[in-house]
Amino acid sequence: MAVALTMARMKLAVVRHSMSGRRAGFAAVGVLLGAAGAAGTVALAFTGAELLAAGYAVWLLGWLLGPIFTGGGDETVRPEFFTPLGLLPRRLAAGLLAAAFVGAGPALSLLALGGLVVLGAGRGAAAAAVALPAAVLQLALFVLLSKVVVALFGLVLRSRAGAIASGVLNALVLALLSQGGVVAVAYGEAGGLPPAVDAVLHALPSGWGVVAVESAAQGRWALSAGVLAGQVLLVALLLAAWAALLTRRVGVARTTAGGRGRMRAATASGAVLGRELRTWSRDPVRSHQLTFALAYGVFFAALPLLTGWEQMLPWSGPVFVLMAAMLSANVYGVDGTALWLLLLTPGGDDVRGRQLAWLLFVTPAALALTVGFTVLVGGPWPLLLAVLSALLGGCAGLVPLVSVYALVPGVDPHRRSGNPLRLTEDEGSATGMMYVMMLLGLLPAVPAAVAAVLYGWAGVPVGLATGLLCWWGLGALAARGLRARPRTAAHDAHRAPRPGHVPAGGLR
Image (cartoon, rainbow, N blue to C red):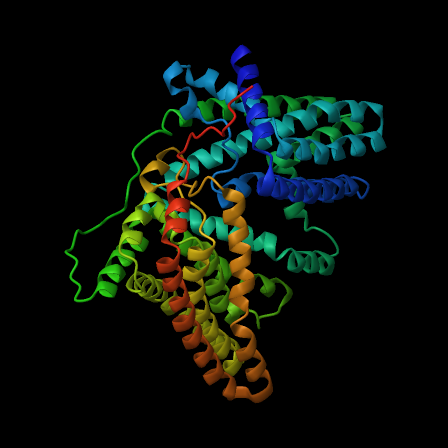
């Protein structure tokens, strides 16, 4: 208990000292959005158990996927901090679990789980009494499932096959969340959730609290008690699993290098190209990002098929390009302190080499998706080709430009061993950079789309010209930025804190 309380106090102290400036602003926005989501979830309780179980399934997905997309989630208090103490894994896990309950995320989730109390209160005092322990246990399940999945994900990302498989799975889940409107339309057309889907939602751990409350309301006390006991048992099993995974967390970062062919290049750009091609293909994190972007494009465009609309399919190519650009927005930052070497010899060759490598990985798949699905649905050819051309060139120019001028210091790749998902210590800025890239990446496609809609095939040369101009012009601006502000960029890279960095001000 003493260890748990100490870690919880450490978490509280670090959070208190780190909430200032831009980070505090991001946190405030996140809390407001989370509070709105929690209030909406509680409101679902007034509609019945069906939609409430669906709402908690979404919260569970958020706990599972949120940390993956934000660099491994909250690691304010990390296992590495306590390695010299020699704590037993189970004791360490219990302490870290106590610390994990400190923060806005658990508080907002508990607020959302208040929907169980609302549901139970509407069914009687006994059901409301069951809702209280069910809500607390369900919160523990959310937190522990998140910790176990992130720990497993870190292990999986150490191999290329695991990185690819996890990229596909995560893309499917995020596409389902992104296309929530389509799912809602399908729900409305079906007149409610299909019985099979409703059964799955109640069978998931996120729906166990609803089952316990409903069972109590119907007088099935054995089932209600059994569900609560199941929650306790699953919490204990997850805690044991997390303790076991923590012992495997610290290790040496691996690459997935296959062959060790010699690099031959006649020019500086060619040398950069060769280095980048090897980096993109051998770094499991980058393999995961590319796979995720490709799978997301396909799933995002295919989900409208649920409503019988197939015209979205050809847009999987442009969606893939945009997502790949978002995930590559900090391409210089992820180099970590190795950026020093580049800044000692600034020039445009590095930018051009990185642009070409990015295009070589993205263009073939984007073209295949766009052309293949356009053939399948019969068009519209001019609009798609115009937009795709502009997006490819525009994003190839924006990726280095945004990375140079808005660089977010990254963790050195060889220091990701504790958590391969954590590419930077400033997750808020990195996430914001991705959204900025999404907005900027769409701009080059606007003139081409307008021209294609108004003049048909004339939009294609407009898209090609826009893409070529953006590739060349924005790349030149990025190279100029590297030459003009080496000290700033070098400082940004150098100040990248190491994993385990404790904010200035210490702990109180």
